[in-house]
Amino acid sequence: MEKYGFKILNVIIFLLTFFVFPAWYICINTSSISFYFILGTIVFMIATWKFYDDVYDIKNGRIILNCFRVALILCVAGLYLPSMVISHFDHTKCMYDLKWLNYAHGLYGFSGERLEYYKKLFPEKLPDECEDYEYLTTGWLNHRFPGSRLMFRTDEETIERYAEYYTGFCDKKYYYGIYDEISIEDYESENTIDELERFMYWAKLDDKWREEFENAEIYSIGSHIREGVLLDKDSGYVVITIDEPK
Image (tube, rainbow, N blue to C red; front, top):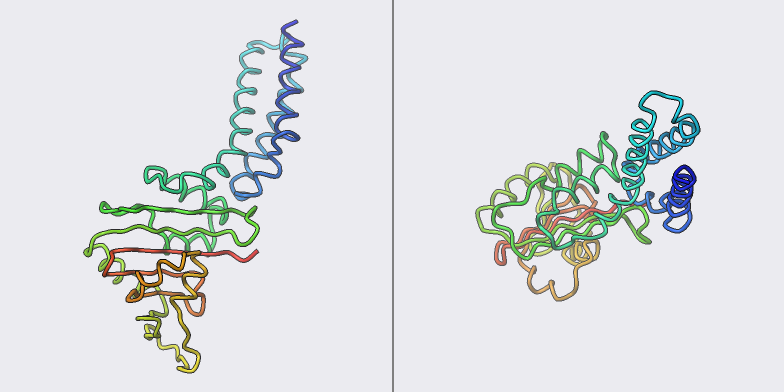
């Protein structure tokens, strides 16, 4: 009876994972991480199935089988948890490190130019002074663009430190929506537009922030205002945003 009970349990886990709560679909959200959990799920599912019938004929068979089961459950959990993390905890500062890791490696993998770029753009640690915190992250299941936006209010010293860092990292800086050259790249004045409006659009900021950020500095990489940083010394706000085209 116990043997059949475990078989029924395995079938239930399989049905829940692949049909009721389709992990194969949800894991697309953070596919670069979930890929390894998919492989693990397949391997341990086959191992559990193959080992099941011969469990009593092998020394310590039940211990080995239970280890396979635990590994299988952990791999199944790994299909869901990264996607759940980046979709929640938007205002929970203690979850920033975990969300940062899940987004960075879930979308960009564990190496590559885009991962290194994200590491430069988004701080791996929050400053000591960090109020009004919000960290929005969306994966590949987002209907528009996967992306992330970090927003918080900090002290003047941190703003100055960030300004020095992004001046050396970014190509362009805007004061009051007007272009200020950082690199030697030429810029035609007739192309000047309201960069604050563009930044707010890509960062998905409400219009209520326009007046608040009218004196802010905006840092961008080349023409990619959709990937940039806003520093407002008056209010102390920092806004960092990035979007990935599908």
